[in-house]
Image (cartoon, rainbow, N blue to C red; front, side):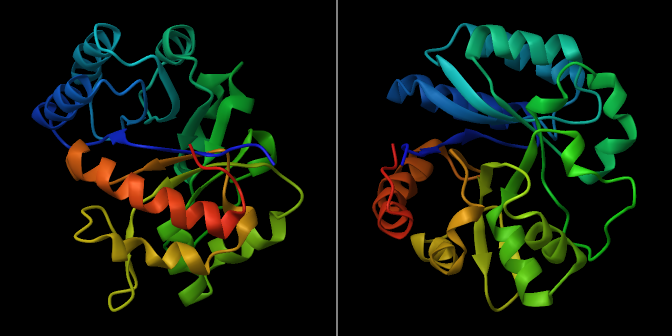
Length: 229
């Protein structure tokens, strides 16, 4: 079984968020990360991409894109950082044609609203990016998204994952983790949900992500009977 990767990520809502994380990444000389662009507009992304090019980062295997991400940006990320998995939401099937030529590099992250639009067709793209905390919530509520994922097991590729914390008491995902225990729910999930690249989707500083990364590598390796790098 090939090794899986658990990587820290640049996330955030404002420019100062990615700037702080990138400063930490350079400080720790981290070569491989995940990148969440969902909350950064085109102007902010221009600055971010330039900063990435001048950083110590060599690979960005997983990138969460947004509605206004261009094919030019996707091509640039592939060229400079060997990006393989571009994750999208259900609503992005409305605008899929704008990414023609990259369909098989797109991976679907499902919502948790117990609604699945008829236009969603995971077979049209590369497969699933399972948000692990979302799936845990979907299981607890037996949602339409949960049934859709189960129906597709063994039929489409489960390529990659977003990893945030989870609150059992609230039945909700946590984008700021307080403890490694916030990730204990991963022990309850089916093995076949886990893809080759697992990227943290939390707002925590890189220093804290590295702490969780170290602790979770061991538990995930034991669970999945796979080397986690």
